[in-house]
Image (cartoon, rainbow, N blue to C red):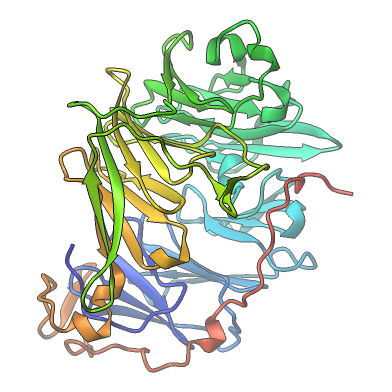
Length: 483
């Protein structure tokens, strides 16, 4: 890891999808920097009538545009062309602050969700028109990914809605967003919708309270088959067990992992969608030559800073369960609701809800457990999108604020990465690979003048006016139900 020099930022500082640019708002401007040199390459002046606080700063898929949203207006700017500016005012007037604003599959497409899930408004900037879809089932940032997905390559939108107590699925044209097909699925309370990465299947699964039901549809919305408890769990009493918590296809679309309320995860092959691997999390882990078990060790350095290291254990060990006041919680629900494949589709990482401080790494080709990572805090994780077998782990405890962990199969356990070590007192002492640009910097094929090396345009502005307020909307379990 190489740290950069420090520069002023805000909670809405955002890197472009291609990782080449960083956009940072100040009181009256948006400063765009090069991620390679950290030099200012473009400055966008906000309109005179722009009033904060900023609710959203988001990049377009191509990294050539970004949007800035407040409660009642949205502005879209080019990352390189000062002449481009699009404004959307009062997009969902009367419904309150939009809980989510984001780009769609195209740079000219903006998705705006109205408060309380009243509607989804899709704006097409190229023709200055909008399409409205009523009653999206999931509309909050924490849940929207479960009810809206864009098909790879073709960019057809699949959307889950709910009205009058019934779920509905619709498939929309990639340009006009007009409905091409819609239907009422055989679900009681659908909890997830997803395209496979190759776009060949649309997956839909019901609430765990209504048993195991994974529905498969063709790209044009034709029902193919239903996968039930006998395939996912097996056994005579499988139909009586709580159902699916999470369903996740692999990046190569060859596999699909399904987690439920048991200690097992089913990995199905997408060619047949029949019997697949059954991975069972053991209650006691016995290390072997092919199974690494790493336990976190916490200590304080001589300077008073916390240090994090992991020791490989040779003794059998049981993962720590979720405790409340030193006792297992009565509300603890077993099962796996967090799982993901790495970029190569060879490794599967899982986390059980009753032992949230432990990560399990599986080799799906061999159907074997390869590593168990035990932390002192509940954790979440993300695989690198392109680099195979590289895992980023973040801890949810406040004591780990600013600390993340990197792991790969060849490392000696997870390695901590502490941002605190690179903040002002230490940053200037650390050599960095970032080159300081000399003279004018050429960006997007045109020379930008007036920026001296190290100069930070707009850094001196007061950012308090752009900070979002501290209030937030709670994710209601029954948010799809409307009076």
